[in-house]
Image (tube, rainbow, N blue to C red; front, side):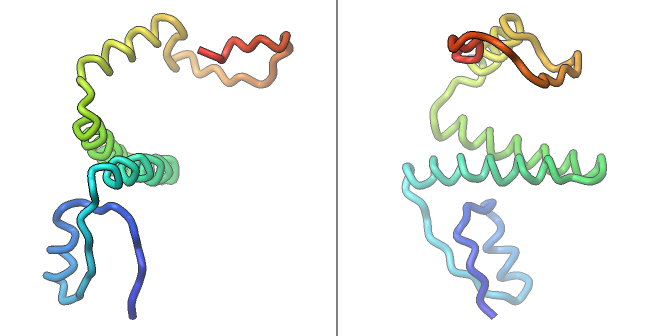
Length: 116
């Protein structure tokens, strides 16, 4: 039975599939396709983080998400230190998430405080 996936997978997945006695068809993505696929993979992995039902599963899914983010940072040639600096800047300007604040509603003029 053939199953279509059409998604980016880890480098050893074809080998693992073949070693299990199954077959697979692959293609190698262009740089542009790879960049798009990594962005799609971030969403896929983030959904898996959200769906994790145990601490052990959560750790595994966060590790997968980190792996995808790391690959995206590399292919986009982004300096990791720049990301950390931006994270600190955003935390200083807008805060972190430690206070567990859930915004229920707002009432204000058309100018949005969220346009930054």
